[in-house]
Length: 80
Image: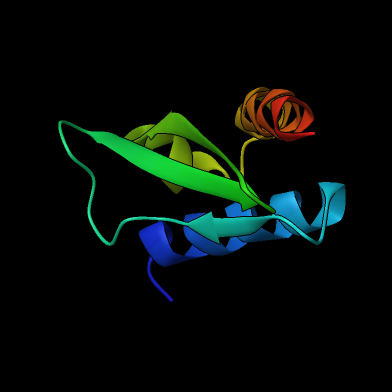
């Protein structure tokens, strides 16, 4: 598994750990070094952006994990 795939896998793990009913769509490649990620719960959808570098560092850097986890939690809370 390459760095990007490991980051996407970790992102999915974080989302599932917060709310297993949220559906996630992560683009295959970033646009302008950003991933525009869709989080959907029921009829509600929220988009968040995650920098490419953060996605690569997500599995190994606790600071990045904390930052991305907060972004995810805030987005999921807005889906309620």
